[in-house]
Image (tube, one colour):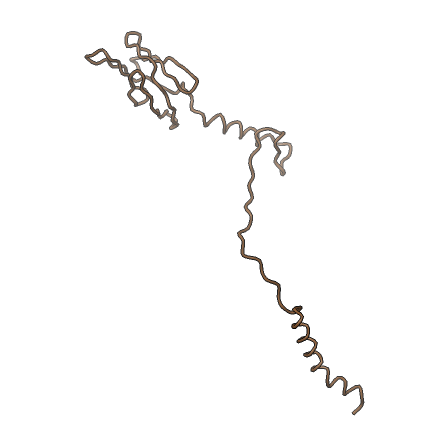
Length: 151
C-alpha cells in the first residue's frame, strides 16, 4: 500500500477526534433559544388633522380627517334631542315633567335616552306648568324646553 492511501485510511478517525475537540471547547453546542414572546401588535391611530399624519396608500386623501371630525361630533348627544312629553302638578302644587320617558321634579338629575339611543345626563332646574316650560342643564348648557300638547 502506498503512503497516500494510508493517510486517507486514518481520515475518519481524525475527523472524529477534531469534532470531539470542538465540542469540548463549546463550539458545537447550539445557542440557548430566546423565550417565546408574542408578536408585537400594530396600532394605527387615525389622525384628526394633516399635521398628525396621512394615509400612506392615499397621501392626498382627506378621508381620515373627515372621519375623525365626524366621530368626535357624532358621539356627543345634543340637548336639543330632549322632548317634554307632559307636565303634571300634584295636589301639593309640586310640578313634574316627563322628558324622554324620564320623570323629573325640580332639582332632580338623571340620564335621559334620546331618540337616537344616546344618553344625556341632565338636571331639572325649573318647571313652570302655567307656561309649559322646563329648564334643564346638561354639562355647561342650560336650555328651556317647551311642552306642546300636540306632541
